[in-house]
Structure formats: C-alpha cells, structure tokens
Length: 446
Ligand SMILES: N[C@@H](CCC(=O)N[C@@H](CS)C(=O)NCC(=O)O)C(=O)O
Ligand SMILES: [Fe+2]
Image (cartoon, rainbow, N blue to C red):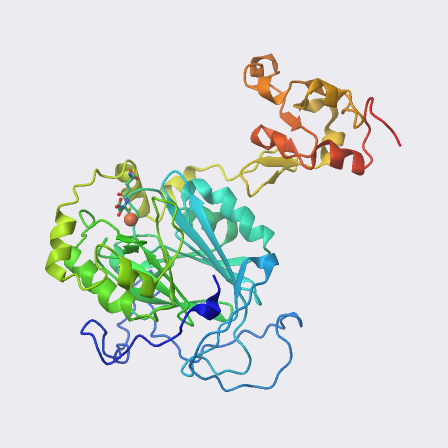
C-alpha cells in the first residue's frame, strides 16, 4: 500500500457520540497481589536502554521537535514492512526518530489464527502476539533467524480454538507471558489492564480493554497508533462471536465503536483470525464497510444479529480453554522441545528439518540417503552421493516400506527445494553438496 495516499487525521473529532472524551489520568495502582506483577500506569517518558544502535539505522541528526501530522514510512525489503513513524508530541521525548519496526504476520492454517511478531529494529527486542502451540518451532526459528530477543508473548484473550504457544516459548526462549487480568488465566508473568504498556526496546504497545468476544479481551495499540491488534473483537468485515466465555454483544459494540473507531482512520487493524484470506484492514475501512457494526448500525440491531448467528462451537474448545486458562503450561511441560539428537539439524522456517552437507558427509552409514531426483539426473552431470539410494520423489510414498526403520533418512534432490517435503532435507541439495567440495560418484568433474 502506498501509505502516502492515506490521509492522516485525528479521529477525536467534535462530531459523533461514539468518540470518547479524552481519558482521565490512570487510577492509582492498587496494593500488590501476591504472585502477580501488577501494572503501573504507563510512564510517559520510558527509560531508553543505553544501547548503541548500528550507525546505518539511526543517522546522526540534530534533535527534532515532532509535530502531529501525516506519518512517513519507508520500506526496507530485507526486513519486510519497516515503518519509521513520526512521534506524537506527547510521546517520549524526541531526541531522534522513532526506531525502525520489524513486523511479521504469521498464519496457522489449522485454526486460521494470526500470530504477530513485532520488534524494535534497533535493539532487536520483540513481542509475539497470540502464538499457536503447534507453530512453536516456526516461531522460535523466526525469532532466532532475525536475531531477536523475545521479551514477551501477549495473549489478546483466552482462546477457544487453539492452545497458546506462550509457555513453550517461555521454556525455550525465556520470554515472559502477558495476558489480561480479567482473563482469569493463571501462570502468566504479567497481568494487563487498561493503560498497561508493554515495551520492547524503544517501542511499545498500549493496552486497551475491549470486552465483547470474551470478558478479558485486549486490543494492543502500537505506540504511534499506526497499527492495532484487535484479537477476536473486530475481524475484517466481521466480528468475533459472543456466545461463550462471557461474550457480550453489547459490550462488543461499545468496545469497537468507542475504542477501535476512535483510533486514527489510517490505523491498520490486524485481527486474531481470518477465515477468508484477508490479512489487514484499517479503522476507516471498518468504520465504513463492516457489515455488522460499521456505518450507522445501532447497538440493538447488532445485539440481535449476534444472537441469531448460531455457530457451532470450535472443535478444539474442550481442550483449548482449560489449557489456555493456564497459559498453555501443562501442554508445554509434556512437550518434547528437544530437537533430533542424531545430528545438529536446523529447523527451517518452512516447517522441515535440514542438514548441512558437511554434517551429512561425516555421518557416513549412520544415515540412509535417499536421492529423490529422476534416474537421468542421478546419473547426470552432478553425479550422486556415495551410498545414496535412488527413489524418485513420485514413488517415495509407496516405497517408504523399503527403508530401514532404525536409521534416520536424509533426502537429497538437485537444489534442496524438491525434497523439502520429506524427512530431513539436505540443505541446498546436490548443488550445494558439490559447491562445498563433497565427494560424488559419477557426474562431471570440470
Ligand atoms: N470452525 C472453527 C470455529 C472457530 C471460531 O468459532 N472462532 C471464533 C474465534 S475463537 C470466532 O469468533 N469466530 C467468528 C466466526 O466464525 O464468524 C473451529 O472449529 O475452530
Ligand atoms: Fe477467540
């Protein structure tokens, strides 16, 4: 999207009863509850960690006084979406531009859940919003590959359709778990409520309590209000359901209309799920086009329409809700986090294990090498690895029984791409094997 096309304006206009008054100062924090970290009101001048950012990320420039107005952004292909927002006057003191943001939207196809990785590109501290248990390896690998330190996993609510990966990530990466105080969940490291602030490096997410889908639903708003993560409150052109977990359609209406729709029109909205392949929306878009509660739909109409939905319960609900009320701890404790021990393998972000040529060469007959190319390639110019067995990919499924069950299987093709769907993939295939000077049988040696 060309962000320059988006008209930046403040939503807190004089018209419209749904736009809230500026919020009063946060309440004085209550006494400490044992075993829980209770949030203090947000510090408008958070301490900036004393890290020295790489020079190319923060070019030397004199301090600038920010003015409210259209945000600027730029794309940096290596890191996907990288935003350089302009600070608002009431944010942290502006001694330099806001640090770059790293942002990734990840999808779990089984539950249609979005997980969001958001990180400060300068300090490389990150948060992960709504991780999915089964995607633990994907998420851990991505965090590691991007050189990030995962500070927090944040649950937008107690999910009914999948188990959270929060406890697994805490075990593996030392991240801490944050969830709404109102969620009733046990075992988190921090309990969030209205106006809590979750910081990662020099960036942060502000917490808004947005009940409706469940009573403990949160929306997370990025520091410069360019993005908000709405969980299952507001979906793209839809809403979360309100028929279980203290769901409340009237509360949902008010949360969306007074909290979400008071964000700037060009604030991008990232939902907890999408069942149709949509990925992102914006406040202005949903305010105009959301068929359930956009336009001038009234609260009573909305409540009636939600009552008539009659959706079947999520398939995983009986498992997911009790597990998530403990932040996924029980499932995590029994899970085998260990990577395969027979070789130093690397779990690829695309969901399979890989082995490097040198490691494979050292393993010798302790593994079975299956070459899944066609016969003419096996005997062609690249040659093949000594001891490799030719089983073309198309026949692999039916010939799995021919393999020795005791020895790990490494699958080899030309470039590493074709064999990625099988057991352990030789990274880079025969091309890299040869490029690294490993021995081949047959083939041309020029
Ligand atoms: N068929 C899905 C249903 C998922 C579902 O009910 N999702 C909730 C969010 S936890 C929702 O609000 N869905 C809205 C909708 O399906 O319109 C499953 O079995 O998991
Ligand atoms: Fe949900």
